[in-house]
Image 1: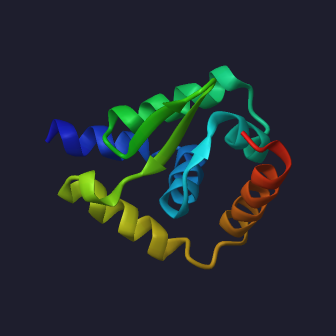
Image 2: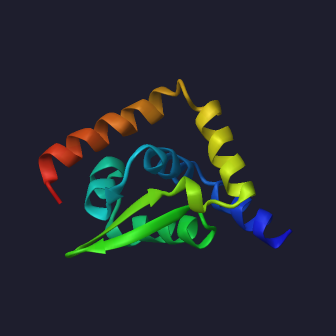
Length: 112
């Protein structure tokens, strides 16, 4: 039960859901995510740590930056179901599409 509740708490925040949906499509570094969401590194890192601790994200350090992504093969059953459900529920969300577009622009501009 603790793992399920930890996962549910992790996705109980709109920003974390948006981050999770964005990282389900592709990896991104902290600097790119900062540009997408307009957040300070410390605030963004808090949300990333929460998603990572709940088992949603994998990270890899490259140079100065950590890159994050959802790694479907490593998700447990609960997290896999939650990610699939969130993707289905927000498949046509204009906000999620804006986040994807903003990430594409950030990747072209920043070259992290």
